[in-house]
Image 1: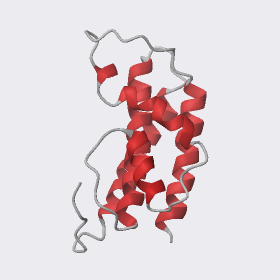
Image 2 (image 1 turned 135 degrees about the horizontal axis):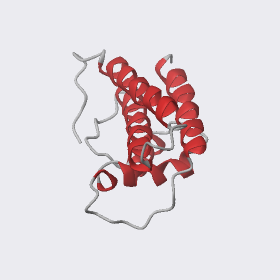
Image 3 (image 1 turned 135 degrees about the vertical axis):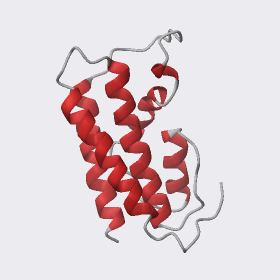
Image 4 (image 1 turned 90 degrees about the horizontal axis):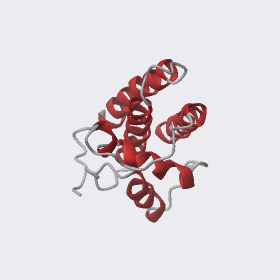
Amino acid sequence: MRAVSSSRPDTAAVLARKAEDDARAVRILAPDSAIADRIVGFHAQQAIEKWLKAAIVARQLPEARIHDIGRLIQILENAGVEVPADADRLDELTIYAVPMRYDELLLEVEPLDRDEAASVVDSVATWAMEELDR
């Protein structure tokens, strides 16, 4: 981790915009059963990761160049930030960050609950926007 430069005040806004792009993909792709769970899960994971990182940057916490949602939540909690209500379930999406993108890695995972993934993405979006408005 490294300290966030104060010369990059728009980084949180950029991350939030990119998170919303991934969230939009989740909302569009989740109802389509022809789209693999790993694709929907990847975009859900990416949206949440980027919103968490946006909150980290907005709070001027050390920038975390990791893809582990649980660790990002821990960084926020350690700084006394109230994390999203669904925080205990968010880390389940970390598996979609990298491993699930490769078919040759046959990992045992439950089918993705697409409605739940979309709901959690929307919940974190609301939380993140409140954090960024502080």
